[in-house]
Amino acid sequence: MVCTFGRGGRVTEQGRMSKLLLFVSSVLLCCCRTTRAEIFTSIGQMTDLIYTEKELVQSLREYIKAEESKLAAVKSWANKLDALTRVSTADPEGYLAHPVNAYKLMKRLNTEWSELESLVLQNPADGFVSNMSVHRQYFPDEEDETGAAKALMRLQDTYQLDSEAFSKGKLPGVHSSAVLTVDDCFDMGKTAYNDADYYHAVLWLQQALKQLDDGEEAVVSKADILDYLSYSVYQMGDLPRAIELTRRLVAIDPSHQRAGGNLRYFEQLLMKQLREMNQDYQPPSEEPIQLGTYSRPKDHLPERESYEALCRGEGIQMTEARRSRLFCRYHDGKRNPHLLLKPVKEEDEWDSPHIVRYLDLLSDEEIEKIKELAKPRLARATVRDPKTGVLTTANYRVSKSAWLEGEEDPVIDRVNQRIEAITGLTVETAELLQVANYGVGGQYEPHFDFSRRPFDSNLHVDGNRLATFLNYMSDVEAGGATVFPDFGAAIWPRKGTSVFWYNLFRSGEGDYRTRHAACPVLVGSKWVSNKWIHERGQEFRRPCGLTEVD
Image (tube, rainbow, N blue to C red; front, side, top):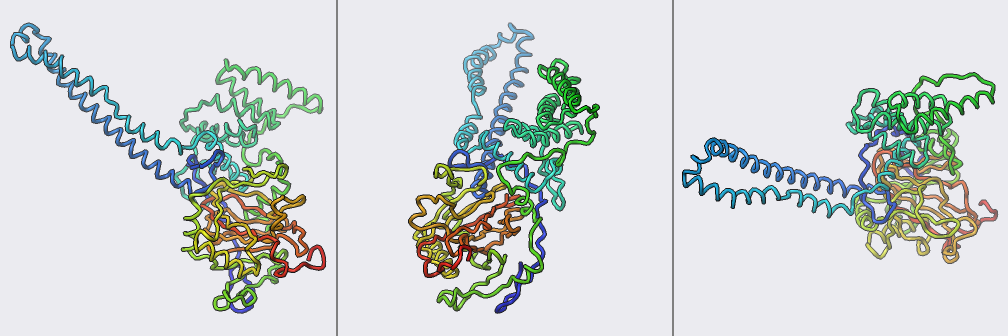
């Protein structure tokens, strides 16, 4: 929402149109990691590899130049000796009769051919190989490539991106030369196939087959694509189409070691199913497989559909009645001395539970200092395993984070004091300032910030997470919203602003409505920092209510 600020002014909200159909560059196969499994979670660190690649290209060009120089020298030798041997072999005795020729022959064979041998044995690749060896420790490996592929599939699901549009860059409003080739699409499908994710395997293998049928050149053969695609379609339960694809495979490669057996098995299985259901054979649909042909399998997340819809800007429950209850105001923290001369601008984002946004809270200079302090320490963000209590990485939280203490820099201390002044809550028992960077595909699926019973042992000292103060330190071109599936709210990142909400009721009970998520970043880089404020020390700052849900 955009406010015109006067004392107690009412919010006027401009419609937020989703920017979700922006094309994602296909070149996602570089990342920098400090521990294993830190896959594509930080644009901030991935940018280092852009410069590494540039340096390697320069090294490669130097190698090519050296090879060309070496080859030119060898060619010069060959041309000179070719002319000379034509003369000498025409009349060997007459040639050697001249003492100069005899001397030069001895000299060539004893000295000059040895020099040529040394030249040929020189390896201009040594410098390039040495440079590669230095940088190889930072190169992505197979696990990283798999993570990048899964990031694309995550974006495809969340933002309902068609494989063909994705692969060819034909999304509305975007003109890009970044495309996925037949081999790229095949590798995407194979990654999903190896993970037994046949839903995505079908989408990408079908796209690879379509592009190959359209005449695009590729390293992978049509037989290989049909082999993987037919079995993936079978796993999706579409026997007629699996049979059709396997027949195409047999026609291309009659000696294929699996195709004939698979075809007989598929046909027998289909006939058995038809007899049991007393149905006649129906030929497979001639429509190409695309997004929506098959249903995506259900997973662990019950609110998956509503969560992803909110990420796309759909299903937001902002009614006129609710909008009329949202206001903007100047906030002085109940006449806090730090805010009396310069109160902060406060906007209501949601009425119940109450979520507010503070404008112009962090300056560009403060943001850059926080990022500068955090970058060297960014590591894969962890979550606490509910069964073991041990911090571990998880696929549903894909980002990198670092923790900053107030004593490290005046900027961090100033931000902490600002949060205390605005919220009226002490930060003495709060957690350190956490800085997180989400790369393309980076996300944090629906979760609670507060701990549920039985509480972790570390909460016995400072209590549960009472409130969340979230700072947006970058704008995001597309995606990256903070969404609340329970009541249908979506809050979009705006650089320099912060949002605040309570995770607990005044009684100390968790407010389960505050289950929220960080949507995958579709285009851009998302930087945030947050302060989790705990219960201890707030007894007189936020007194208990009379009921459980006050």
